Amino acid sequence: MKRDITEAEGKTFDLIIVGGGIIGANVARDASMRGLKTLILEKDDFATGTTSRSTRLIHGGFRYLQHFEFGLVREDMREREILLKIAPHLVHPLPFLIPLTKPTDRFIMSAGTLLYDILSYDKSVPGRKHYSKKTTMKMEPNMKLEGLRGADQYFDCQIWFTERLCLENIVSAVENKAVALNHAKVTGILKEGNTVNGVKVQDMLTGKEYEIKSRMVVNAAGHWMDAVCGMMYGQPKRMVRRTKGVHLLTPRLSNNALVLYAKSDGRLWFVIPAGKYSLVGTTDTDYKGDLEAVYSDKQDVDYLMKEVQRVFPNLDTSDIYYTFAGLRSLPDSGDEKPSNVSRAHKTIDHEKLDGVKGFISVLGGKITGARGISEEITDLVCKKMDIKVKCKTATTPLPGAPMVTREELSKYTADTKIDFETVSYLASLYGSRYTKVLDYAQRGARGIQPLCQHSKDITAEIWYAVGDESTYTVSDFMMRRSGLGLAECQGLDAVEIVGREMGKLFNWSPEEQQRQVNEYRNTASLAQKYKE
Ligand SMILES: Cc1cc2nc3c(=O)[nH]c(=O)nc-3n(C[C@H](O)[C@H](O)[C@H](O)COP(=O)(O)OP(=O)(O)OC[C@H]3O[C@@H](n4cnc5c(N)ncnc54)[C@H](O)[C@@H]3O)c2cc1C
Image 1 (spheres, rainbow, N blue to C red):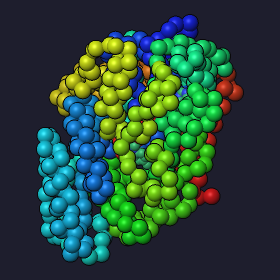
Image 2 (cartoon, helix red, strand yellow):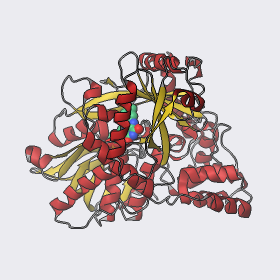
Image 3 (cartoon, helix red, strand yellow):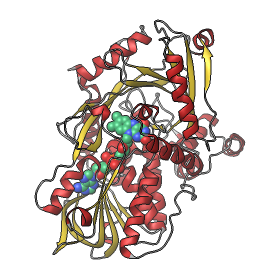
Image 4 (cartoon, rainbow, N blue to C red):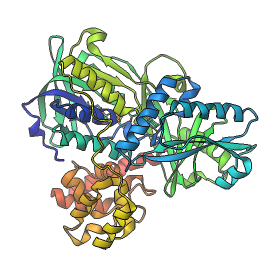
C-alpha cells in the first residue's frame, strides 16, 4: 500500500471519505468492495483519533443494559461474532468476572448476564457462569474486595491492536482499488449550489493544496465532525457533545477482566488483562479542551486510583506506566449526565436535514459496531447513486486473516531458525501477513534485531511499515503500526533507533530525524502529564 496523492489529483471519485478512524476505514472498505471509486483522506494517520484511545474491547456493552439499550447491545453482539470470523487474528474471547458484594447483587447481576446471554443467543463464546466466594478468591487471589460473596462470569472479546484493525480495513480498501491518503487534511468542502461535489485537501507532508471532485462526501471525522460540517455550511454547527474517557496502564493485576462499580458515583469501570499489563478505565466527563491534545489530568487519575486501590490496595500511583485519554462523540442533547447519553450512532443525511445534497455525516458508534454502521452508510450512498450492489464486508475476511496456527508457526520457526516467540508475536500483530514482515527481514542482518527490551518488535517491521504500510513519521510507526507505543516504556527506549532506521529509508537530514523523534517524545509526554 503506497501513498500517492497524484492518484487522486484531477480525478473525480464516486465517494470521498473524510477521516481515517475505524468508521471511515470501514466505509472505504465497503464502498470499494461494491465497486465505488473511493478516496479516503486522513489528516494525521489512520486511527490517530478515538480509535486508538478505546478500552480495546469488542463487546455488546454490559453497561448499556442498565440504560435499556437492548437494540444496541444485540447489534454489537452480532458484530462481535462477525469480527471473530473476519478478524480472528486480532479479536479474541475474554472472560469477564463481576464480583458480587451486596446481597441484592446475585439477583441483579444474574438477571444482567442472563439478558446478555439471550441477546447473544447465536454466540460462539461461552455462556454465563456463577462462582462461589471460595472459587472467586482462587481465580483472583490478588483481588481484595470488601464483602465479596462470589462472582458472575460472562464472555466478551478483546482487540489489543485496534490500530491494526483500522489499518487492515484500509489495506483491504486499497486492494479493492480505493485510494487511501494519510497526512491529508480536508480544509474545505466544494459545493455547486446546494450540492456537495468534492473537497479541498492539504498534503500535510508537503504543504501543497489540491481540489478533488466526487459525487458524494461522507464526513467520518469523529469528534471533529462539527468542524467538517462547518466547512460545508460556511459557519460552525454544533451537533457533537464530547466526553473524555481515560485509561491507566499498570502491571498485571488480575487473571480475568473485572467489571467493577465505582464507590464514588456507581459508574461501571474495568480492569482488563493484556499480557503482562492491566488496562484500568475509564472515566466519562464532559470535555471542552483542545481536540488535538487530549490527556488524563490529575483528577482523572485520582478518581481511577481511588477505585483501583479499593480492590488492589498494593497498587501505587507510581506503578502506573502511562495513561491515555480519548473523546466520545455523543449527540449534543443538552445537560444530561454524560454516562446517561445514548451510545447509539447517528447517520445524518444533510439532504434530509437541510437540503444539502451529496453529504452524509456519522456521529458516534463503537469500534465493535463500525462495520455494521459502515454498511448502513454505504447502503445510503448506493441508494442515492442508484447502485444495487450488496455489502460483502461481513463475510469477507480482513487481509491478515485467518489466524495462524501454532503448528504453522512451529514449522516456520524450524524452517527459518527465527525464534518462536518473535514469530508468534508478529502473527499476533500482522496475522497471516507476518511472513511479509519476515520477508523484509531477509534484506539485512539487522532485520530480526529486537527494537526494545519491553516489546518483541523487530527492525524488519520498520522496513515493512515504510515499504508497504504507508508509514511516514516516527509516531506512525511507534503508535499505529508496531506494538512499541503500547509497551510499558511507550517505546521511548527504542525511539532513537526507529528514528535512525526511518531516517535512512527516507533520507532525512539529521535535523529532520531529531524533529521526528522529538515529536514522538512530545506526544508520549501527554501520557505522563497527570504528574504535573
Ligand atoms: C474512553 C473510550 C473507550 C472506548 N472503548 C471502546 C471499546 O472498548 N470498544 C468499542 O467498541 N468502542 C469503544 N469506544 C468507542 C470508539 O473508540 C469510538 O467510537 C470509535 O473509535 C470512533 O471512531 P471514528 O472513526 O468515528 O472516530 P476517530 O477514530 O476519532 O476518527 C476520526 C478521524 O477523522 C480524522 N479527521 C478529522 N478531521 C479531519 C479532516 N479535516 N481531514 C481529514 N481527516 C480528519 C481524525 O484525525 C481521526 O483520525 C471507546 C471510546 C472512548 C472515548
